[in-house]
Length: 149
Length: 149
DNA sequence: TTTATATAGTTGCTTAAACAACTATATGCC
DNA sequence: GGCATATAGTTGTTTAAGCAACTATATAAA
Image 1 (cartoon, chains in turn brown, yellow, purple, cyan):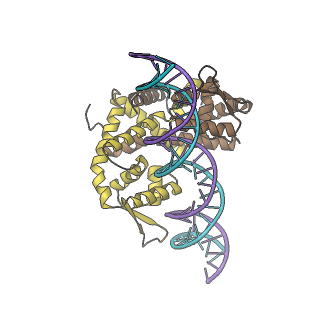
Image 2 (image 1 turned 90 degrees about the vertical axis):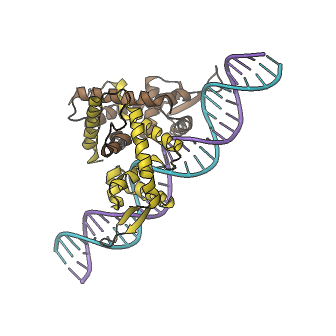
Image 3 (image 1 turned 135 degrees about the horizontal axis):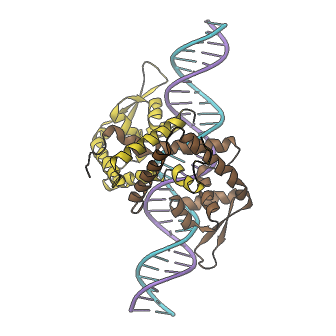
């Protein structure tokens, strides 16, 4: 692979993820305007629990691409907000299973709608074929790097 | 624009910027292995100063897509590391012009090479046409959202 | 000129990321 | 059983993000 595949001037925008930062901020803003009082990081944890409740913290690490201390503290904060509960596993006493609390169940439809709406704002005017290609590229980047980071 | 352009299951990976997170982590790791003792956030500020020295903090905000407090503190830390210097503008006494210090000049070639190398690792196996499309999509997303966030 | 408004930057506060070091439990091997 | 090692999670520390509130200077309007 050639070493100068990128001209210097192009480096920054590709590395720093301005686009995903912008989507995150907009989603946070849309949450706030809808009086949803959670952070997008907390939402990302709930998102995976809505898909499957009762995940362990390690499974949440893998799903959200965060390290263990980050998940410990996100779960701490979600517990304080009474949105999830830690339940010690009976099979393996090292593990906590994280379960949705009633308040979080209520948030699901509202925040999913806001997330869809945010993506539509973000991708206004982008043709669907290009979205698909962008997703493939980002997934490939992730796969290329995730293993050994 | 249809409201269900995205299936729920696809939402998360597109929103959270796992790919750019992964690139950032890898770049940080590559810095560390090369004994470059700066954060990628600090590097992103230096990157713009290498392109043009003597930017104001506000210009750095715009260039790096950060708010003013973030730049204040990044410049604080870069000053502590003796990599930049604040110089009060004579034309407009509200402004600080940020100038590279000798230590930062030395970092440029080394870190630019590491950034290029990191991108090559990230994009291994991705065809260049798809990279171009992905860049266009991300730029469009940024443009769609940056104005009013 | 003085008054309102906009701009540049700082400080305080809360949340989160990343890394190292740690505890506790489980598993594999002798 | 007893020991080494792996796994799950926590705690401490530093850096940064994002928001609100603030100071200081500049600009525009009356």
